[in-house]
Image (cartoon, rainbow, N blue to C red; front, side, top):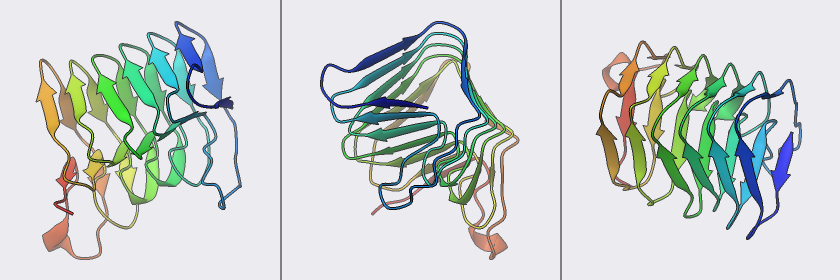
Length: 178
């Protein structure tokens, strides 16, 4: 896949695809698609990040980086946490268009696993058909006490989780207060 190594590193994607990459490095939690370290910026205007595999965030893994998603798709990626997008350590996720579909996570956040206190912004986007095999948040799982903004024509629907206790299931959106 693509590795952005900190401040000044930027990926602007207007078309094409980043696909069929596999990372088996569970020590450093790398993803198969795009890994953005602190200060790195990913701008997704078009194209597709798809069919990647890794331990965390197989489509996009943010470790203090920023994702500006204005279009395109993050689809059909699979990992343990955050099949489509995994964000941590003051990462910024701003989605103002595009689709996050068909991703799968084993534990949490089939579409998005947001593990930071930074805002998660989702406007005029579609988060559908994502799955979490064991726990919560088939569509979106927000672990920390982050502000979540959902607006415009955003659709977070038809996602599925398979929590062992049906009383705790949160197919589309799961918010934690930790």
